[in-house]
Image (cartoon, rainbow, N blue to C red; front, side):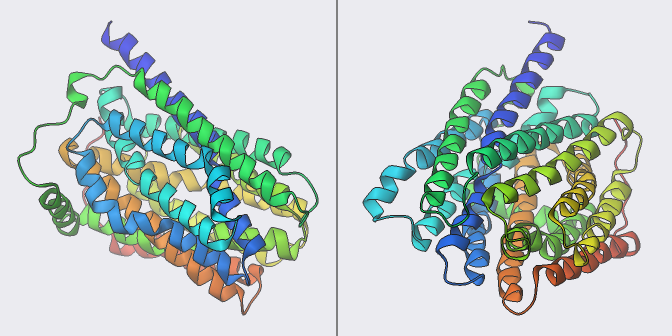
Length: 412
């Protein structure tokens, strides 16, 4: 098989695996938040459920990244898919043995799913440069992001239909569990597609003689000493601390509490954000090749924050859908720009460790932000929550323009 045919085949398989898996997975976090809101005793339970479901990324992230750099990255992704499929497909059996869906079971499922998910994204981002050769990384990162966002639209749109029904009805929890089982089935399909990828020689990991813990420590030291990576991780941490709690907890409370709507409307709200993300990804894929990725990341943070501010005044659900589409346009600027900078700047043998640290930063700060948002929601409205997030999120990008300086990698 020629290298060009191999590239096209591998790219299509990776795109398809991500699309199928993410289509089902699009509803996991909303379903988790909704279940917590349904069985929890207060709004704070939603924040704690999301926080505890993200905790494995903080506990196991550095080791997962070191493991990714020591082994076949495709096999890591397949193992992650199969374990997650097993967990979700057997959820009704687990719930029956447990005695029903309660807050403890919701947290346990979220914790285990996150544990199995921890190495997947670092392995995917570390594998991509080897699969696409010398092609434009920003363009193909944007293409992969488009896959994720199209999957969110499909998954959340389908989920909205599957979850339709009376809010608070007796079968609402059963409907949510059924959607989680569909998520589990998509992991099986993803694993099969990944199995069909033909790995090029450069995608195979080098032999390591050091211990995995020593590798993990080496990745941490590299990140703290490198101005590009260290600055990027710091800005990512601050931005996600400001933004992500309202994106998950605030959105659920806004739709459920302020608008008085149900799980289906929450799914469509999140799906509309994905529509905006597709638009932003397509713009980057088509026109972003010559752009400075540092500026793309920082402008993304500024606009990501500013587009939260209209929610302070929005009282109408359809108008909220329009606003969240606009907000979604700017999210890919952060994600694609960050991924491209790392792929260009960091040596390939460290990709897994550094992408794991990015994952830890994103997920860890999301967890803290979700817990804080649940607490803040106890004393104020979701609208105020969005306003605070918008201001502090935009400030992260402004600070970055003055405080984050480095020589950007040469474009290939």
